Amino acid sequence: MLMSAVDKLKPVETLPGQERYVAPLEETPLRDIDTLDDSSPATSMWADAWRTLRKNPLFIISGILIIFIVFVALFPSVFTKENPNYCTLERSLEGSMPGHPFGFNMQGCDVYARVIYGTRTSISVGILTTIIVVAIGALVGAIAGFFGGWVDAVLSRIVDIFMAIPMLLGAIVVLQMFRSTGSIWKVVLVLALFGWVSVARIARGAVLSSKNLEFNTASTALGSTPMRNLFRHIIPNSLAPIIVIATTSLGSYIVSEATLSFLGIGLPTTTVSWGGDISSAQTILRTDPMVLFYPSAALAITVLAFIMLGDAVKDALDPKSRTA
Figure 1 (cartoon, rainbow, N blue to C red):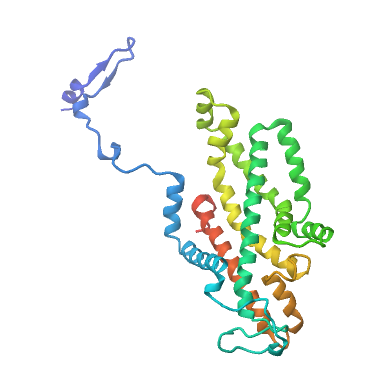
Figure 2 (figure 1 turned 90 degrees about the horizontal axis):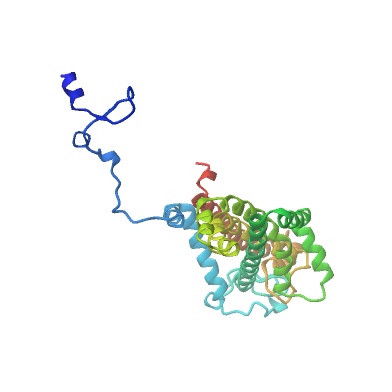
């Protein structure tokens, strides 16, 4: 029986003494494990990340919170009809009453209205700072990583110089120099001045990893210019770590704005902000702690929502970083 099976094998033409035998194709059908299912649609990294995010409870909870917070920032009049800047000393430190659920602060301002309208300030500073930081940091890091050589050396030393300056300390010094003028854009630009370096370092590492991959070599072989490769192929394929650090850093910019306003060198006193209200309420912490509690709770919930979103996005775009 063994001889009959060997006889069916077909010899392959080789050099003398190196004959090999191959079984007929009809006797070796492909197994199911060897077949390729081409009926399923093609997927991408972003599609896989979205599929992962939709199943992550952390993303769902943080997403709902952020949508609600952004809605409050865009349409504060839906939640209160009170003017946050209208204050009467007759109501100083009065407690909760109909239409004023959080009571009044020392100046007689409606705490609930100031918490609602302060959402717009904090969200605006966080989002605008993140946009500028990502734009500058991604561009500088991508150029440094792509061109290398002296370009990389010069840009890397500039990044090192800014990395040596703590963001909050540098912001305090710069804001003290321009204390005569106050606006949201001043705080945004100062925070962006010291915040772009972290994005630049992440972008540089991502571009260094992407520029040696096959798609860049194939694009160059087809006649694509280096700048076209950089902006058309390499940067889009390096966005995942940049998006991760952007989402995780947004909350820190909100905290930085509140800290600067708390110190009295951030936003002007005429601007409604959580940091300014916390600073005003610190003197009555022992007698009326709830005046400080409400803006502090709003700040903590907002920052926590963005931190949870950043962790969920990190798990989806960088599976290697998952802890479980």
